[in-house]
Length: 425
Image (cartoon, rainbow, N blue to C red):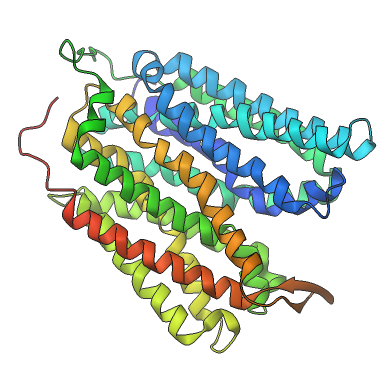
């Protein structure tokens, strides 16, 4: 029982496959707005997801030292917070639906439960197994972290059909209650199994050396900016994914395509990180990701694919390549360890994840603003029903993501050098 698969890989997957379901948000966000009486205020409901991602990044940043000192304490915090946040979300949806509380109070409760409490569970749960994985898989750090972070991406593919079935069979609030219990069990088992290698002795960093010292490093700032832009662009398209699919005439296949992009996300996380193990400089992976994204975004723009001027395959390629941005997540801890060593890697990784927090606030909200302000709304038929879409608005989003990807590529060349040969252990 004391091997790298039982003590690192399996618990990491149990934790990440649970918390990764946060990316299923678009499947039920509209239903939440209707349930609590805010059918005309879907934009306000969307902030619950933004807060969840924000507190994910900030809890990782501020609790990185807790993870560094005690992975069992941090994984237990993650388990309790994630389950309580999910159950609490179901409770406020139910109270809002029944009229027990006003729509505004139900929304505030959702912000607290899905945003704050669940967000803390996301951040600590995401961070807890990463260093342990790198210690057990010392020769294949990228593969190890990619495996766990792929679980975060694959969670959407696994949970999407289950969530859709539960919504239809037991209702939205009950879906949250059931999943809270299921994910608590999964994460608690992962918490019990997670363990650092036998005989590993934590070597304290030299006196006066703290993880926050990386904030003075040009290299760290470059990595932070690359990561921030990578996630911002990813979220800009992910938040519009369902509407884009409807706009290109594939609304009946939303669930299937959503699972396809989730598989691409998981594949990008695992494939890019495993590939990086064979490279002298892991930053090369970021350059490849940005170049691929620039290429497919430019093709989509030039062909006007979202407007229906070409076959939908171009947009499916765009969504899958965009989903592959998960490779940036899985390569982050190993890139940081290459530059700053393993002594305080959990804390440094946590600080870097603050980029995810700010991207969570800017990504989907920026694309929603662009779609609302530009283009023209028209109707599309999905399963015999008319739905509103804005193909021109979605196309405008691509102009912004293309510019950001170009900036990120320049940063990867200018601000992030190759790591020095001598690394801290």
